[in-house]
Image 1 (cartoon, rainbow, N blue to C red):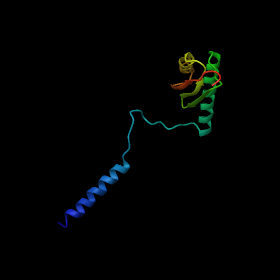
Image 2: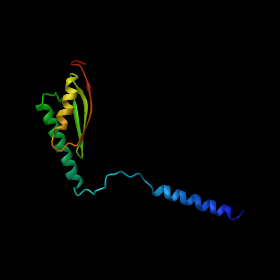
Image 3: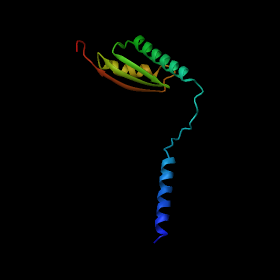
Length: 113
């Protein structure tokens, strides 16, 4: 009886220690970034500007659109005046060099609303 209590305590401690040190892993290898945080921010800003420029050149009204870029992933948020521009904006953004993925969260906002 006296032996069971310490063994239970040791087993519980071992389980807690293992669970604290475990984390989920992806199939992609982790590669350390060689860029400075400033260079990364600048690259994200440049990509965002390039996407906005491409949207504008492609006929999409960009005044209500916010373009967020982070490491090649682009998020389009905001509103456009007609539904056709939502799909057009997504396709144009995908074609910009450096864009790896696009999340299109645009909505339709009628003029005057």
